[in-house]
Image 1 (cartoon, rainbow, N blue to C red):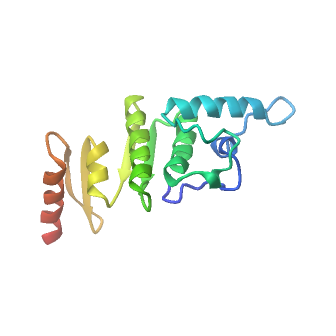
Image 2 (cartoon, rainbow, N blue to C red):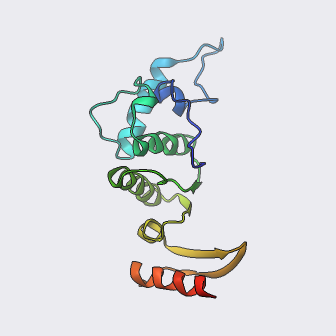
Image 3 (cartoon, one colour):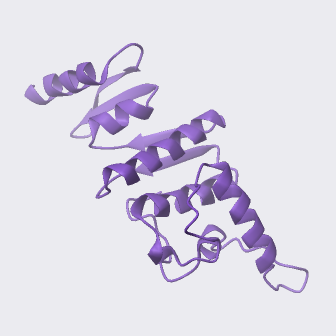
Length: 163
């Protein structure tokens, strides 16, 4: 998923979840009720618990974190085993970023692999099992998180930046 989440903001949540992969009957008509029901179930499953929205709500009414949840839901629905997130918390409030981080933790609990690309070391530390640090296209560190604290990780990054 790209930084901009590639959503059609004037469309509904369910239309975005099924965008390009609509459920149709034998004649090619979209099964809207089925898409709405599946969207409702999926969004609740990943922890999207806001009472303000319905699957028919317009995406442009959602917060940044909620929009990212829609994009993540699309990946889950189509059983992606690997989800790549490029700067998923960029320009988000702390509460929205927290929602996204919880969506990522839910993906991990479901056994999905997540590649999390970020310039925010605290976000990366919060969800990572392994770090790959790159500097100008070269891998300068590749190893497990282990017992490394967030402060140690940031210090590690500073050491690479000084070289």
